[in-house]
Length: 139
Image (cartoon, rainbow, N blue to C red; front, side):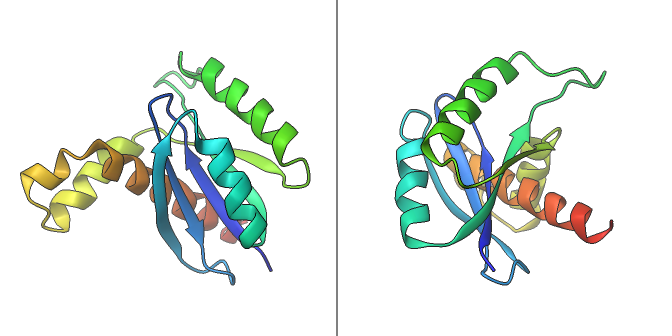
């Protein structure tokens, strides 16, 4: 069984999360710059078996895709060309940044650490992955 990898894509920073090999637990993997993420993922999948990549799908409150979707679609096209054997799925990422900040506060992180945007992106990827895993387990 391969891992599931989640991507909270941003042009500046991209948060990554991954499951354990049994797909039970979602963990933060890294935050990398937006233009280096495909190369990072290519290297990662050369070392670890990944069976699915879940990409955060940014929606507005009215369920329409956000303005950022055009960048995510470009990223996913590049990703599919680079890693054609790994399927890519989208998962709603609404409120993940808010939830990441809440998790940081609940976890007792000091204000200075909560302002680390790369940590917020990584935690957002974990939230996307955890929610995706819960959705497939509930089907």
